[in-house]
Length: 386
Image 1 (tube, helix red, strand yellow):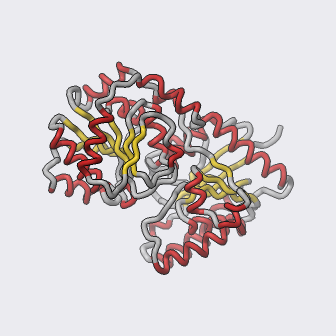
Image 2: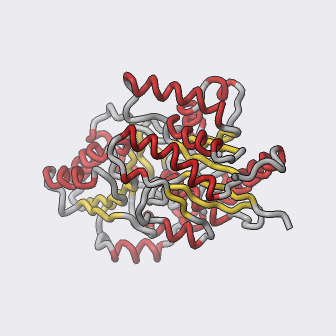
Image 3: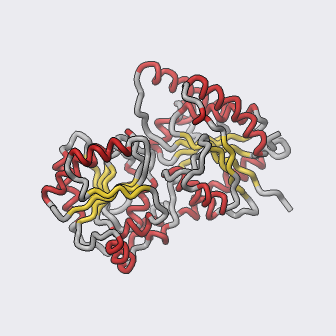
């Protein structure tokens, strides 16, 4: 019997959108064809580690968090990754990248003997795109077509950000949509009532956000928007799901705005489909996104989504979406949230809309499996990592 293809996913196992996508796909894989293992850079137990292992995956670690100096950390990451990737026995390494620099893991993989590198863009911008940083990233961008055997992106915008003209002009990439298991998000009035009672928000206007506490997600402006919502709707509650390096800063900002009694810091959770059903509107004022998985999840649950106009329009596939500029006032954002939250909808119908828009994980898993099989066939007899 033919051995399944061993794919080493370079992805964190935390609570982020990239992890969610990869594990959604892992749940739908035909394990007689493809198996996923995971390469991470955190020497600690991660939020989704058990889920990954329960699906049959192994975790391989390059522990860069042991080093503070950026140069030493980068050198350690590059050389130690060769050893770890070689030990994984991977046929294919699938790099889930947020910046061109991430292609360096592909160089390590080639040196480890892996013949097939997939490079998958999940971002559409960076926090720092000036000066020397911009020059360095431009150089790494030119390295991608040299190292990557096949290019993927979560959206056209993510492809345009990550890949050089050589790849874009030849249309040498495939969009793998940030798909979900849509039925997990189908609305239930019983679930809504249960979770609104659990959260003690039965009579409230519930606004939500899911995302790491990091600069990209723009939490301070989100709090400013909610402050305006609260002025107009004193029954409003904001639920923030996630953790991250700016958690304490945002908590202090909420206290400064005297909103502590109406802003909930929920942390990370596996109950996102249920909590989305308890909400009335979702805010996503990020500075940039590739194609946010959470934007797909929100729509599947029938929840209005108010987001930044820099986010790809590929996430706009229902009547639930409204784009606003970050130049617009917090008051304008607040008015939009309240307006959309008060529109009555038949929320049960939206998973079918999400599926018809191509965001069902089953179809994207099949597409990705075919790509793995194609490249294995083209490199048959010379692919095994040594």
